[in-house]
Image 1 (cartoon, rainbow, N blue to C red):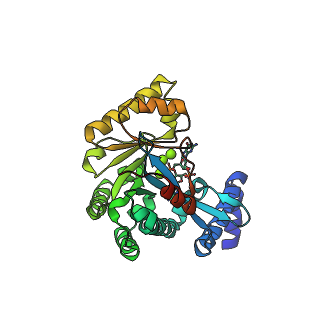
Image 2 (cartoon, protein in one colour):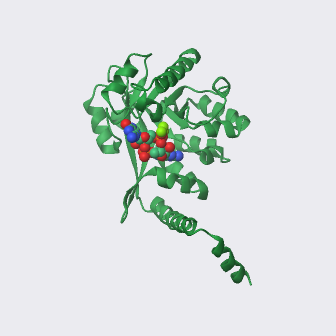
Image 3 (cartoon, protein in one colour):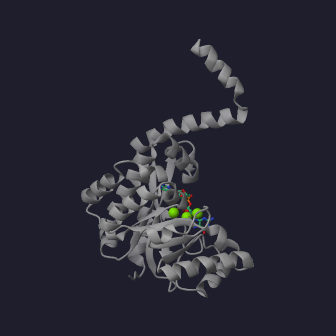
Length: 279
Ligand code: C2E
Ligand code: MG
Ligand code: MG
Ligand code: MG
């Protein structure tokens, strides 16, 4: 009888929905396999100051699928979130980022590493302990780590967020609001939470040189950050025109294809060795 009911339910699915469900089911199984079989890769994208000195890098996850090739995190992070696999993925990324910080080229530099932390990972019971364990296991300096979180993560469970962030901030970890301005949120959290950095979303940077509305939004974000003494990273800087627009404003860090694409760990370490690094 359950089988019959199941058949009936299937009939109500839109074909497209069913295709999505199948895709998700397949990806979930393969993603589980990927974590266990070393198919994940850590990529790094450098962040530069106005003098083009590297100040840090963002850690970005890549999945080298044996048949499908390179899969973008945009297509598998949401599935990892829904299935809870994000906890394993998140641990993997944090452990790799921490190990990277302890490698000679980086240990002797003041470079910071930013790691994306997803809502489900952050709000999961035991997150603080997992972070502590990974720091202890790798010996990484917590004060050179930044966690990038989104506005929605912050807004969802404000009290819990204050508590968790404060404990992690006490360890020395910095917090950055990713894709700032794209979520809808009250700005009140900016003074209640230990936020060190705002990342201006690529969508605002893109047309800022030509569109007065985008320019106004970028300037508004810079003004807020300036008043609250919060650092700023411009993300997705692709053209000289965008860089010139930003350079005429208050100081910030720059990240984008104009400077460097995300690259594998080995290439990044070589770049750190080759370039002059400043704190
Ligand atoms: P994000 O954190 O906002 O990362 C910035 C994205 O913009 C990255 O895409 C990066 O490769 C891309 N990007 C950088 N510069 C440029 C540019 O000049 N032009 C353009 N068009 N794009 C640029 P990516 O690596 O595909 O990551 C997409 C998203 O997936 C990330 O957005 C982040 O939300 C998520 N993600 C990536 N790695 C992780 C991870 O380890 N954990 C979690 N929870 N999420 C991750
Ligand atoms: Mg990010
Ligand atoms: Mg971002
Ligand atoms: Mg973005």
